[in-house]
Length: 211
Length: 211
Image 1: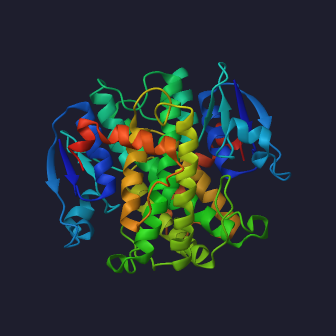
Image 2: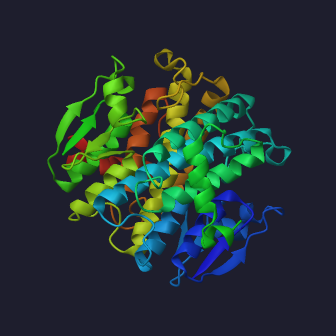
Image 3: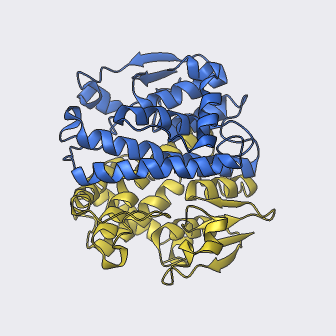
């Protein structure tokens, strides 16, 4: 099994923390993003979505998208469950991971990819070029602030994002908070619950090992 | 158990088809979207994301987001699996469902919500108001065409979206194709594989029962 990786980027970091939390070892293949290797024919033949991370199973099946990779790994390595322990918790983890992704990761990416010179005509992940949009960058900045206050509210009443157990929903929320610094956004001082939770989960060994 | 529903809309339709495929019966509570009931205090207290569908379990737990609802239902009703039958297929279903959602549903919604008078200052689902963006509507229209050609390619080599079994990835892809008609986009004639697959899955009883 191999993980096609680019550990400096926030989305691969989500999977790298997940893997470290499970205490498993997976061979890495570093994709040269700076050289655009993820959009070249050899990589595109394996992963038409042209993104990382991407997992190649022992049987040579390619699984992309973090939801696909984490679900596969959770199934074959069920110890240290990170996608929920029973039916209700599994539902709640998917729910909160989706909200963190939609309202957090995508919001920060919306600012970064629509403002950075490195993403001119590449405003969306994937094989297709899209022009940058200042309207989207502006919207993203507002979304980030709403993300902080909404998740602060959830953490006012819960130890972890999806309830009383640490899960993939925490990983995506944590990565969002750190990724937000790339666009000069920080958890506001008044979001005391989110700040306390962020300080706590940042101390986890799996998180420290994947800064 | 109750499903808070608005069956005219595409996202609830995804869950309604999923439920019908499983052959299970769940009580429905219709949310009055036209009256904005989903953003009023009573509903917001149950579901701060202010969206439908939303599931209330027998223990009174509220699970929103289609990923959360379908995962919960798959766990408690494992017959007729729609999220994959083994680890690899589970990974591939999540992968393809995510791609159909990101590149299909969100693209069509991007056009609709950024152009329709019904969504002025409500360009994104959820509790927060966002202004419409003509840039986003334009981008969405391009994304829809890329969605059609990308999924046509996948269906050139596979019987169903995620491989050789019908799954939630087919449901989201089907709903995207039908939802696209709301913004006057149709599967292009040259996408013969996608068209043939669409004709086939549209004949399923669960799909016909949830038009």
